[in-house]
Image (cartoon, rainbow over all chains, first blue to last red; front, side, top):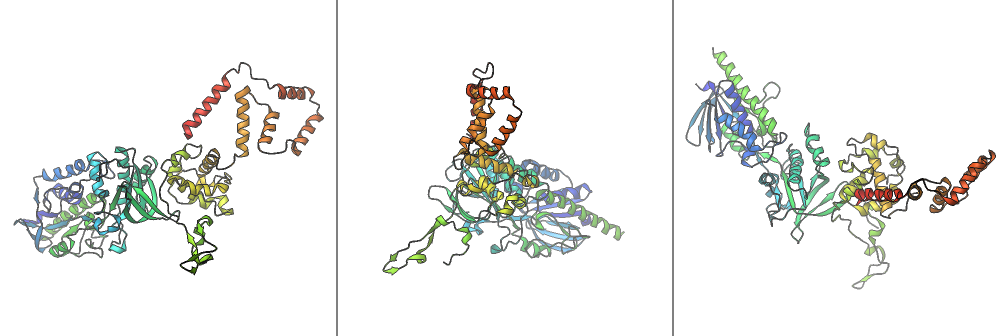
Length: 350
Length: 238
């Protein structure tokens, strides 16, 4: 009976939401996760407090994991990928890398994204200097409860966060805004200040895109209550000062002057790349990719959550940079959509 | 001289030798023109807090540089060098030297408060202009404003006697601000008063100018007051 089963590929926030919704409708969900744990990026990368709820990732996402794992209608395959998919909408057979075979009527691709690898912007010092970090590393530092320079453990006088690392950059073929880094960075600045009040935090930006209700809750709050300084400059390079600090060079576009400012820690607000596995996913599932390399959407208005192949749905950051909350909402929608289409198929068959 | 963006070069950064020969080659005049760099090498992290200690500067940290203040500014319409948005930015990052370059125009704010009304972040740019002007006065970067002289004279008399003598306030104010002691309007003022022959009043005024009586049981009130004002000022400005 494959028509009562939905195969969910990816066990992050979107996939977990999809599986839970499939279960709620009385259908079976089979979750296939390539890593050994469920939870996706927030868990795998050790995010600290989530935007915008402020809840610790392990608590919030942990509840989502538990909900799926505890459901008798869910089957979870960890450390496995889908190797082959045969059949058509209503009648798919997937072969997994762990040797198992799954029969499902629909597939939800909740395959998410890959963090930008800062090594690809060598001029900003990541991989060269110990005190240049990424936002995910800084999240981990915040989660550990202590702010210190990795090089020698001193408390930083000054930290700067560089926005748009791996986003909005034609030089490296990233012609998209990763949507959430501004808000995450504004939030991170507050978390740093909370743990280490003597540290001043600067954010170097081209534009601030704390959309919707993130405006006052994150951008304004960070600036007004936590004294984060926002400086309009796209940084040219990060070098060593010779006395153990880092020099951040660029042009302050608002005063039209070159700047070379000493910092103790430089954080890259890394963007969201298409999942590095997307070419493989595209081939295995027979779905198209859009021009940036994310999954291509079906016609949006009447085929929401669709891909270019019937019976295969998608959601969250697989489609493009997405927030955790919206990924969850889209995952729930995709799960619901898959179940609804299966229901219609069974009705039609009579 | 082939220099582009001349607007960005202050005169003091232009270096040129009238007579210069290098390795036997005559490079006198504009051939040896050098421009010293205008790179910002550090921020003064405490300056913003300092300005926030002056009345009006409290909200300067809220600014996000939209430029609404400059756009709406009465003075900017007269002189594009008058740029509140820019000065607020310099204040935020602590670029004091840049601010001081504009010391002769910052005080020109006419307090029309169009900026205050338009500012989306409630920075109160007009207040920041006042705070900056006061900071410059306090640091001796600009001369004391006439109003500051007046305030000081007024307060000094209060500390001493618990009251002010109009004539004495005016006299000392004129002295401190280098104005003639006898002014046309004052002559008219006194002449008109004389017409009514307020003998008693004039006598009291004359008497008080010489004797400057104190308020009854003023005692040490003046000292206490003076200390309190000093403490408050120190608490605010450090």
